[in-house]
Length: 268
Figure 1: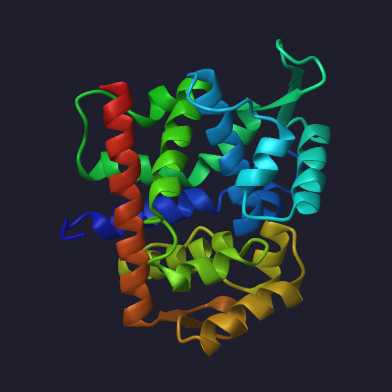
Figure 2: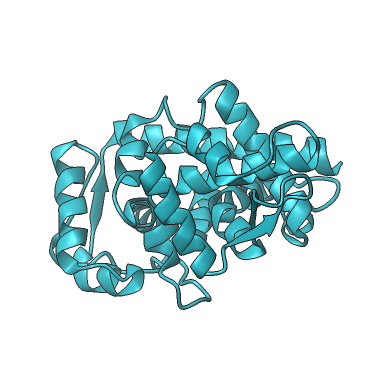
């Protein structure tokens, strides 16, 4: 956080988080919401542990026992992910009735989007002896193992979400975290004298994230009510409270450290 390039690294991270998806699926709306993200995160962790003989078979029942949602919610979400090609179901070798749920490369890439962007930000601040993010994103199993080990750490102790209630509040809304990323992208762009990657108008954000203008307005109203930030009419300027900026930067530094350490343990 004391690095003179920290603001630039965060500007780059936030810019990466607001880039449009390459697929037709509304991935921002589907995965950028805490409950659905965590269900997918747990699914990846279950599969990674099972592949390394450290856990039970990654079935729907196992996921329903471990993920923080109702059994009905999880079943419906997994059905949608299978239909979209994000989850692959295969018959178990020991029990042909059991379906093993495996993440596709598409799901891994969506869940790893923020972790990889944080890892790349850390590589800009402290270049490693060999590339980390590029090597992890190249193949499904290494990427899955990296995310799975992150889930193991999260399961042992929640250092990723619990200490940051202000950040988590945004993740509880559809596209809340991408909208937050857009807000901070504009904030850091202004500090560095650059043009933000997306204007903070209701229309521009609604079009980019495929939600209603009212939904964007509700997120902004809640952000102002909780003392996080305010956006001027038309999205031309943003004012972020020092306390919330500190929370975001502490969150970001912790994410960089967490995923960097896991990557170095795995890749180096």
